[in-house]
Length: 291
Image 1 (cartoon, rainbow, N blue to C red):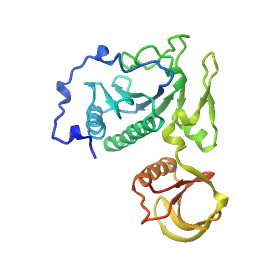
Image 2 (cartoon, rainbow, N blue to C red):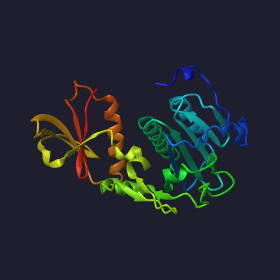
Image 3 (cartoon, rainbow, N blue to C red):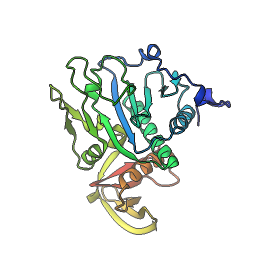
Image 4 (tube, rainbow, N blue to C red):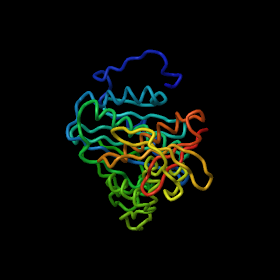
């Protein structure tokens, strides 16, 4: 359901958008405060078609609040009054970056999750590939004195106080850390700060869900089978509750499929469907309770 402000027909003409980055209008975006949460992520493409970014802009205009600022190469969008994202593209470097700041963990998680989902949709539409996805250290970002940018060359942010480059982590390493149940990574800055993985990639950590041990799940009959997963009836042994248990097959992109399923069921499951649902999550299960 789009925001109320965007329920009327509007048109976007990319070639008429201003080319210059509105630096003055963006100054209020990056606020250094101790109670702020900071996230940063970048996607590097093998090929970046010219229409890709305008198409992404249109989709974000539809799903989020009306942008505060937008131009040919970027936009500033809101999840709410406190949670904002600065998204920019650098066509020469074939890179798109997103920086988010806000106060509420769940709002920040929803925003990065939505943007990441839209990036996957756009990538599939244009049949392009990500050659690299990087996650920026939230501790380093909190030390940045002005809004980050990708314009003017390869993206290399520096800490305002130490002049060190902002630490980045390959997205694949963050996925592995989640799967290996690692709680911390290390920032290579001078302070060697411990970085909490669930804050670094909140859309992957799923800390808002209850984690169940596989030893507490007794599988019963197969209810159905598909290309990506099998669904079993199951019993949650501590309570005797009958559940549906979906187990993903060992595909290359099973982790992303798993996350899509969790997000879908999070908003669509009802008590008429199941008392609760279980999805296989190595080495445990995620429990999704209906509202």
